[in-house]
Image: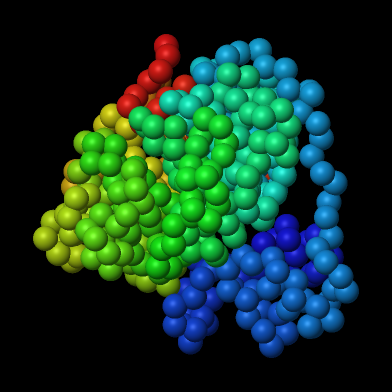
Length: 428
């Protein structure tokens, strides 16, 4: 949002919802979608460029369309000095590109950030790897598209960006790959749909966008995949999770209503290593908490919400689960920490909030664990940085915070480990 307004030459004030005073000021709106932008007498909820531009025009603050900055440079400079299987891919939302880091050393896969970057315009917000198909998919938020790259060398799958990009829907947020089939699922928040792609060809899974996009009841966001049950979980911003059959996209229990269970509002979702528990941060207008649900029934794990929702730091946003250990990670925007929680009980992993909370940079929006060397990666959007931590203790991976931090493209969001899939390590 800050970048969008700055490109229009608009001066603005920022009021963080981590401040209780500012959160109370929005109570009169009832349920709202952050960010909330006040332009004159108008309010725009969520990040919606067309509505924001229209409101700015009505207020007399801009004349024409959005001012576009310079496009990304050619990817001719991409010169990797390590295999793609060694890469951690990180999207740069404001940098319009995908940066590749060496997951063995923590350095850049091409030696420098410039030589490790694939240009992907359209505000890339998420990245996902299909090991079955041998491709990497990058989701563009503003462009409403998905760009497919080769997992072998990072090149565009079909020769160039245009030939490797397909439209998906309005304001997509997330992507998840089927671990056994060459299928990719993309959630489209404003289109209120999930689109399915053939990850091997970059084409639509069912022949066309119309036939491959499936409507859901609300705004879909982060998703999780249960390969043992063939279930796709779709987290809805309104406060619910929809369970779909991954092969057909049919509701798991016959109808969307019967296949939906209610949660608090929020954005993240993660699945336990044994595929039996769903972890869900709840915030965005609701009481802050970390909730555990049964992954098959959708019921609170410990019999009731009272027993299954645990207090957290202010504004829990992202969540990730260790792929081989019962450890869950929550990024909390208010105190700017990552909490380590016991995935079996919901309690603080190391006994107390203080000992189980690791300071990180502002805007920790994504986390992922590499089980091969037990590293937790945290992308910090506001600081354009990547932090590497010990996934079991939270200690800096390379001795101290400075040595364990790398500069990313501007506004890092999504991450994917190219050498690890849902079934575990692929090399080393």
